[in-house]
View 1 (cartoon, helix red, strand yellow):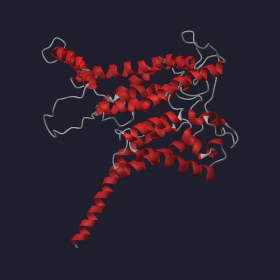
View 2 (cartoon, rainbow, N blue to C red):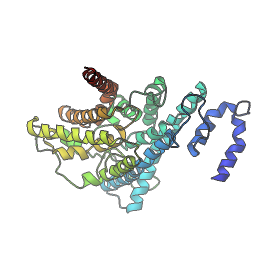
View 3 (cartoon, one colour):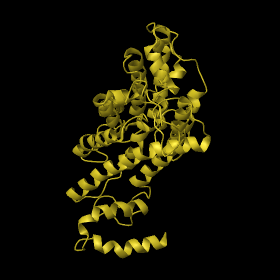
View 4 (cartoon, one colour):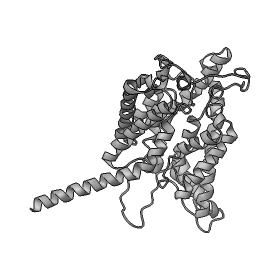
Length: 392
């Protein structure tokens, strides 16, 4: 690391004002501050900084997502080999999934970071680090059958219209990765739903085999189209391990819990939001079990709602986004609870869209500032009453 530090110090003057590469100062600064903690001091305001800056926080979230990414790669290969009848062991399955998922990750980062680099250079500002997390979240929340060019278009749309127009990292109202998924769902619905997008059909570099017309429904998809109230799938350990069709990184509860443990231990994510989302989902699931319509989704056991689809993934990695979530301590409970409730309501009452987590979080992103406002106003009112009472 010392050698790398010396090399960066050597070439740094070229990127500073007056240097021959000064036009790329933002790009150099972005790489330098990603590799090393900045040693500069503030010119105004507070001069005390925590060494854990935004880039370090984002890096922790990326590390927390690695179990989901690795398992997702294996599951992509497992589903392909299982549904096509191909023969292969663990490494063949993982290798197939690795080769299928890696291009999606590359496209996401190249498009998203490319736009952020251009905007930073144009505005003569530092490159913002928010897309470090969004760049890996986007590939994990899409089906394996989603084409690369569509991911590129959706990523560009979300970075520009859900982030940069609001001022960049820390200023966006909506979760960038979820806006990407929403854009995909409404602009290219056939690439985000149905039975033909969850299992990869092509052979990759001689691994697996190509099968035309392959279909495989998710458990939620089957329940949403069931005609009988008992049409939901019985509990299976595959719901916990994640060996089932679904979005690349959302199927394994175990992998998600590993990431959640890291986020909670490091204090990066709020346990209050996570707990409230699960509590709200369980509460609404029980209500529908008792009083819901005679449909499979309404009578699905509440614990199955929590482990299927993107519920766990959304609760751990999406709802806890510190930029778009509520920031008051009481507001976090309310925010998380309403996300859990709305996710189950959308699942049960909208059979055309069995996965309600995305819309629930985006909806509550809108109301997060309002929740915080009323929490703060409630505290102010309570203190005023206490002050008046003490003066009397």
